Image (tube, rainbow, N blue to C red; front, side):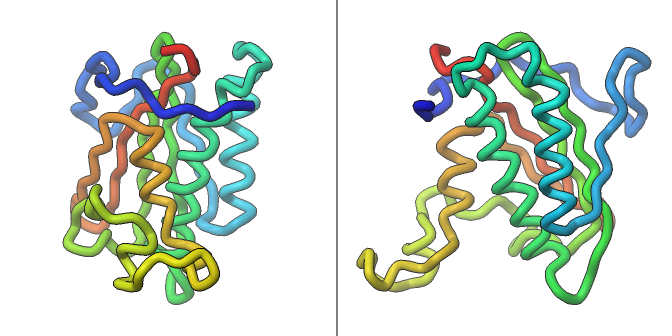
Length: 172
């Protein structure tokens, strides 16, 4: 499988979500516990919903990487050790795009905004990058930004919401 960056352009605009209700023809949201097993269950559900309709060329792999990074960040940082709770996930295929809407009730992102796009994991630690001393983690947002488009984070009351699109076709 070859991974490539998402197209430089933006995904076509989606209809604005003006309520928490889902249209009648929309699949129900996936709700998992904010645990490593919950993340695994969400990824398996995505594969079950979209895998059968995808060519066996790794096209779904990019979306899986992005979703895994997002969900793991929620488990490790939003809920962390002092909290647990649900993660609500809406997945909609729109042509060659997968539209993702993730909601949780954990801690907000620092500054209630997305991490700086110009920093990698090594930059965020403040240390000079050297492979032998590189941090184990901290590269998730670099990967998310490399493969996803239309990233949008908001905090409404006690709810975090992250929306993004990922191409389901490596050739786009």
